[in-house]
Length: 150
Image (cartoon, rainbow, N blue to C red; front, side, top):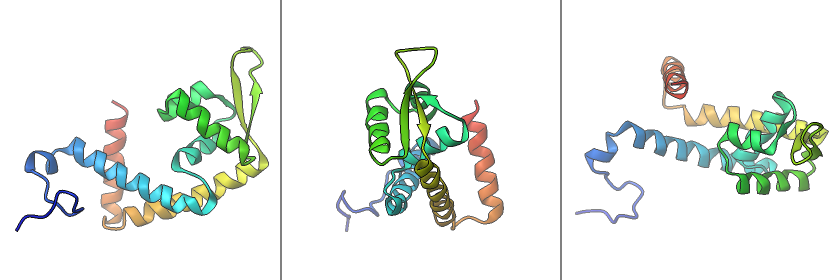
C-alpha cells in the first residue's frame, strides 16, 4: 500500500533522498522551523535573532550590510527591522557619512533579547543535534564550515 504524498513519512525517490544538497536543505528547514518555534517564547524569529546578534556583536550596521551578511532581501530586511524597532530592540540612526543609509543600533532591551535568544538557540542546537554523538556534531560542524568557506 502506498502512502499519500502529503504524508510526512512519504518515501522519497533515491535520486532525492541520497542527494546531499537536498538533505542539507531539508535539515536546514527543520532546524530553522524548530528555532522559530522555540524563539516564539521571546517573540523573535530566527532571522530577527540573527539581526540582533549581528548588531550587538559586530556593532551598528546598515540595513544593506545586514541583508548581505544574513542573505536577506531588502524588502524582508526592512520589515524585520521595523518589527524589531516596534518592539524597542533596535533604533535606526542616519549614517554619519552616507545620508541615504541608516545604521541599525541595538537598544538595552535588544541586548537582553539577544541574550535570551542565544540561550534558546543553544538549547535548540542541543535538541536538534541530539541524535549525533559529540564527535559527530563536531565533525558535522567542521564539514559544513569547509563547504561554507569555499
